[in-house]
Length: 276
Length: 255
Image (cartoon, rainbow over all chains, first blue to last red; front, top):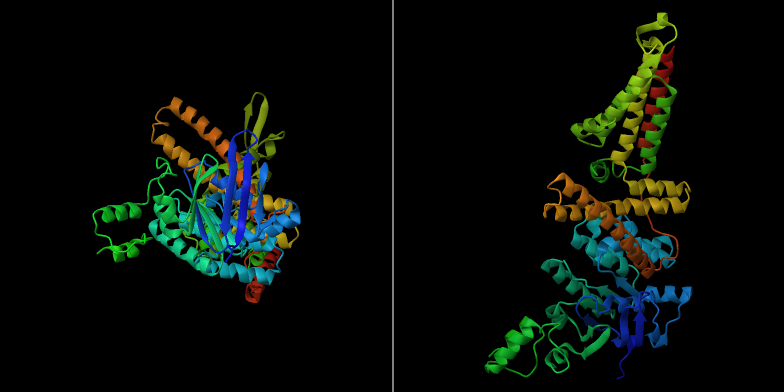
């Protein structure tokens, strides 16, 4: 079966007006319905890349394809694209512009031109999915960081995009929230949604993602399935990113000869099963 | 920000904002129309409604009412003490640099009316501020077809006041923990840094906000849906009754 790519970046180069090269010939293909993680330290152009996928930034050279078609930068096409590709920004305090949670979430669907009763349905549904119904009447500035993050994700879910892009979604979150959000992403993936996120948490990326891109200085330096990327040491210079803890333990155990099976474990449960 | 937090947690939060606005503004008009007795009645009325109906703690309410006093007393003094030409109508008078200053009966009565009127109007405004969130007030204004540019500005300013305060607070704490406010000289310097970095941060944040809005299909208008409220006829009848009682008592006392 031929793989279906929903978003593609082909030879994308981008320079900010002050001359810094943020993206330098980036090639990325996002498979439909998959969970993709973009790994890399701060300031390698992950956010810049995401803003290209949503049509906010226009590449200096190269092109962005959505569903195999090059995106056009006129208002109607952009609105269509932004309906289908949603971005959850890193800092919820900047994304959330309204003092009321309900109003905040209704902003996206309203911009898509739905009538009010349908917008209400979508807002309620998104709040249910994020489990924030009880925040409905709360003002935004009373919320904790984790709650603000949940609202900022609901903002995007309410627009029902095909692709959900999350910029560093796990930063500052407590482990419980990270768990919840991971579960939510899995659920969205089951609904055939494509999820892209950036992170520098290699452990999270390793056990969560179907496919990984590693970026450095505006370039993609490695790509592939997690187990492949992290075991291919020739391609990677581990000074920027460390190896996932789970993989290191696996390799140590394998060396000592107490490993069963040849599959590389993706999480603790799989590791347990491998141990003799 | 005390008032703001009460506006979301008080017992009248779910009352239709139009009803609350109507009540506050109708009463306020009466304060301007009638004299001191009506104003005293309004002060008591607003106290009762805010403290017993909306369940704002009496202590908080009284503390808030005390805030305007410092302004009030200064303005009252300037009203009470006037330049008098005819010493015989003055209750008390004294000479400074050849000018006769004194207190007249007329001045005192104007001052009394102004004093109670100011307090009564303030209490109406406090009632509104303590029971109605800004978001609701903006929604009502939108229904009354206020210009959307003005309302959107209001909405964004209100939201980002809190972001700005938080940012200022964070910077202040980080400066203070490094002895930034240990001496007067340090304080001036630190405050300067705080203000300039806040300015730069706000500028950068505003650009990021624009990008975030654009990503959700912003096209020049902040379209949102507000909360649903239901009119309560009992409340409206109550408002009309109270206003009628106030008007009729005031008319009777005027004679």
